[in-house]
Length: 163
Image 1 (cartoon, rainbow, N blue to C red):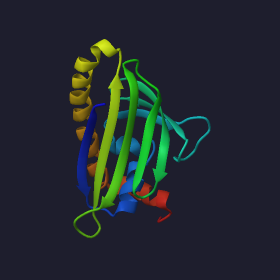
Image 2: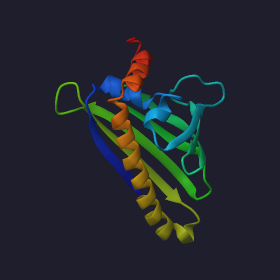
Image 3: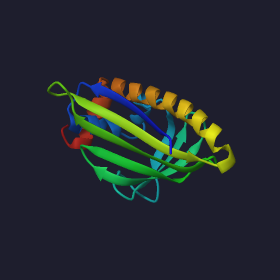
């Protein structure tokens, strides 16, 4: 399966970096250029293992994903439950590790996917790697900007109970 990855170092500690990544609407829309609409489903009010989210991308594509791992402040993982017809499988994980300098974090975002139908897979997956790679680089750049945005940071601190 193809894998796309993006890495950035942000000027906040891992706990806060993780919390920024888990902000929800409307704060999420300040930093995440990929998401046009996102919310929890089935009555969930916060992220966690087994929780599902609805996401509409800037491309208009819709996906329902489920958290398969939840380990603040180091990592979070998800898998597609329902999504665009051309994805047979889709999953991703975000990791947060202490950066090279005190108070910094290295964020690594990795996605893997498998396209369908099988006879188109070789071409579709090459195109997917390019498109998804471009989107993930834009998205992690937006995330890095969010880690410097006072409004986003204030919302993330509220998630941590540090307000």
